[in-house]
Image 1: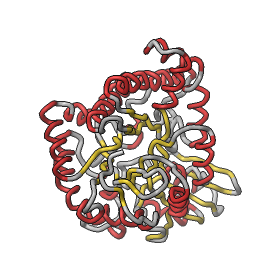
Image 2 (image 1 turned 90 degrees about the vertical axis):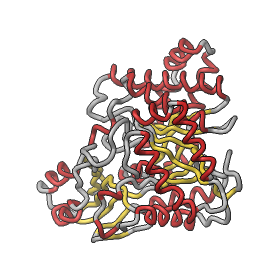
Image 3 (image 1 turned 135 degrees about the vertical axis):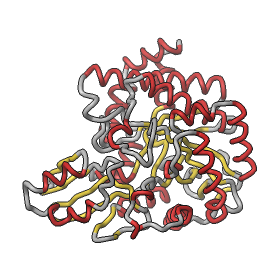
Length: 408
């Protein structure tokens, strides 16, 4: 659905919340949950879907009769797909994910192929002349991108993706933006790092030359294509964990002339005190599946930890009080629970900015952790929790109406 906000952005939730790696599993989850959710949040208009695909699912959905069946499901149910989450390549639920979520990274042919396959699917789902987004890993895991050659390989992989997206636009008339999603403990950890990488490496003369060689375009046209097909996926949780000022950071991205292709509404854990005192509270969220990067702010200095066990170990070495933020997506409608807080204030900043100006064409709630959250902050009815998040965001945006058709 489209919101009655500046730019009429499309709005939904990311289906990475639903377990399933094969297309058969994903299709079953969508059929089970989407109709009930739509009845409560978009009963009279088309409802957008933020579709998560694994590499296996992207290939499965590309099979002609499978794709046609999905298109019928969308048409008959009143749904449409405007964005795809192609961040996790493989398994994302029920098993240890941790740093493997960034593999394969942008140095590899596997990441390039997966992204191209996801973009091909999205182009076939968009209406003629439509614009879609595909979110992706921020290069890779920080420890993996260790040498100048690694950085060059990441940049070249992304430029090759742009060549595919450019050719796709030429042949299909659909425009796909690859949305790089900064995340703590990654090669591109902060928004500022991502902006600098885009400006210095991806919009550079060397990248323009690579793209020219791949497509035959002039240098000027290559720069236009790079800027058209590369942008950011701004996840409010990730930004808050990095202690960024949300509205100011988004304004800086806009001033730099870089697009925010997708804005993900999400909240992180937050607390102030001695970590030794808070440890038992945070430990409840150390689920063993996802990486829970932590950032400590003490006396104005930020210290970053790759995961909670590392943060716990560091906490034993000092007893001073400090502020902690932890990468764990928690329900957007909660600001405090079980003795801890959330970064909901950052989320409210983003929502307020969306009311004032166009921030991103695609808005998406992304709380994928329901299955591992403590029972006290979730219900047994997952669809009900998703509806509650969507309605909370709609209320915060002071939604007056949604646009009929919702089709760009």
